[in-house]
Image 1 (cartoon, rainbow, N blue to C red):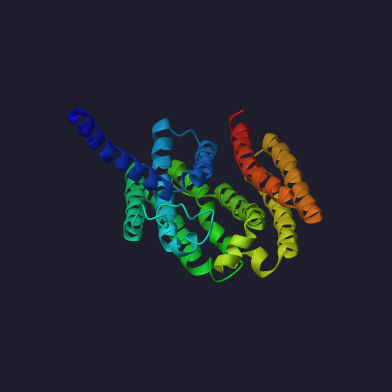
Image 2 (cartoon, rainbow, N blue to C red):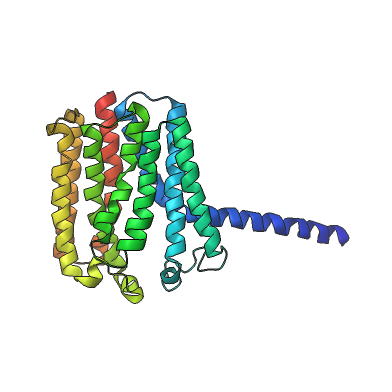
Length: 301
């Protein structure tokens, strides 16, 4: 009996530690991070022939910076997260992590990421990564998200920083191609996120977040998705025709993926269903991944 009690007492702290670790990891938004890291790694491979060590180090630094931004976002949005069914179980609104803990955890990760990238890559890569942290926390989360339906347009610039970080880590500078890659992610973000916001319109309306479907309506949102999808298609041609240095493999992939993206956007505008919105949202994730993989194939094959 005594042995059983001792075993139970020893298991409780371990369980609590695992829950804490799980919650801290959740604050860094690991699902979002996966696509950011993919654009970082593929850009590094396009930029040159980086060592495995440099790739891993850059991914660690990028994760720390973006993860810190995620934690600060959790801290700032804790009031509306508590009111939305999708986010009510997050660590802060659920009461498992104190708000102040999340805030300092996020700031600490961002500072650590800057120091790490400075030591393992270079100051430019570290500074660009930290600018992404500031853009997501201050520009998007604090300033834009609750004030304007264009929040994701300009706030999306923070998510477009990883290709710049990857390029700078390999080359120590920036040139035309990484700027094009930044622009691709920048113009990809609105149609990607607005497709999701169509599915979450009621939740955003409930907490007063002025996402495009809430403020301008679903018809205007679908129109804007088509517009930005066409702009995205045009921007993706710059690495080939704008002196970016990419060739036939990328051209074919960008044309095929772009036509598919625009087609799904037009179908969403015509069908106006949740199924069509979800289909475009899911494809947009695959689209960006395949486009950046095609860049690597174009350079390495």
